[in-house]
Length: 235
Ligand code: PEP
Image 1 (tube, rainbow, N blue to C red):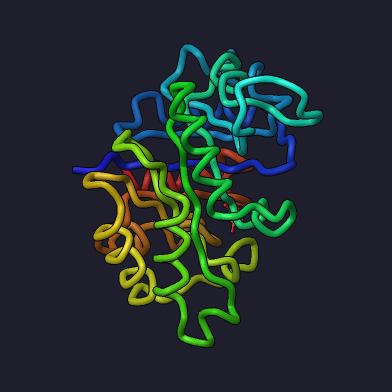
Image 2 (image 1 turned 90 degrees about the vertical axis):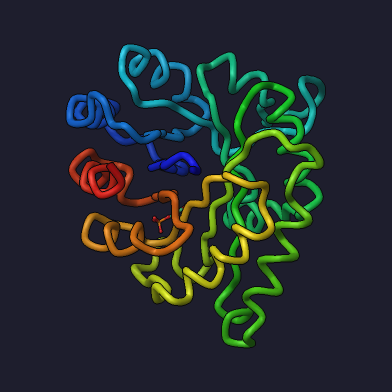
């Protein structure tokens, strides 16, 4: 059985860290993996703050190299040293803002595994690709290009670009079709997360879809009030 995971992606936002304390108090023994991925500058302090709780932390990106002349970048080993156990890779915002290719995401995933982190590899189609009925072809290509060439455990997140931060979500049938493809293509027992405008009011319906093992959550992970019902729906 794949692990159940509620992962929060704070992106380039710095909510009051007391929100994480509240979340931890609300879910002292969640029974599912609960994960917060803050900006890199907040990772060490948030990891320390949550060290006596069951809430884990992760990074939002890493470099392919362990160290060296890469101004502005952070290595997987540095994320691990700051307390992370996971790292989000290939998020559509990184693919769009930084031109990240599937091949680069694969190299990053291999570097993350080397450093002992579990990669959360993101894939997702644009609205144009969905309208052109190319969704499954796009997802299949992204996943086969981004998966590391090892059998090490990892997590895959399906995040339709047009559903991120827009309030729009695919129909259950659309999510189910993509997750069936991911289940067939990813290593067995890989947790498969859905991401894109998940909130307390739609989480239970999304978690009831076949092969959905949790969520990667952006906006609704910034407060305990918004994230806690999503965690509860998964528990
Ligand atoms: C995300 O950025 O990973 C995401 C899913 O964002 P939101 O939940 O805000 O749509």
